[in-house]
Length: 173
Image (cartoon, rainbow, N blue to C red; front, side, top):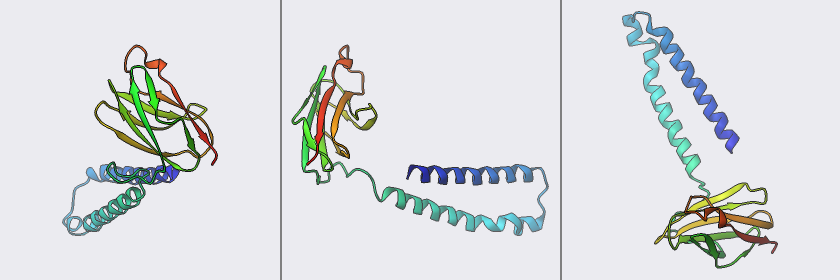
């Protein structure tokens, strides 16, 4: 999906560059009356509506399958992990979840803002959200492989910031 988005973006950039180049080359010539009535101006209205259609279609395609549910929507996650950030540690209501099943992390903070980041064994960031005092963020994530995953703080929260890793085990059902 990422490669498709890149290719579409690249194609649109090339089209825009070609249009700008045509305008620049045409800018030095005088406009004739027949050019104003016909010529390139006859494409203005159809081009506008084509771009509107492409924009609406792009919005529908790209927003129809968001990877996360709305904040207030009910969760289909059968596994819930309450995560609270403190200076300088995490508390998790459970430290083991099943692979292939959605997990809802309910993330908050007891003191200052923290960043809640889930990392795989090679320390690649998989998902993240903010941990804020007085507010609970819901992060829904489905682990695809069993193993040990690290939870690290992504926002500097004081002198012991680097000392607050946690770990969650993902096991086969």
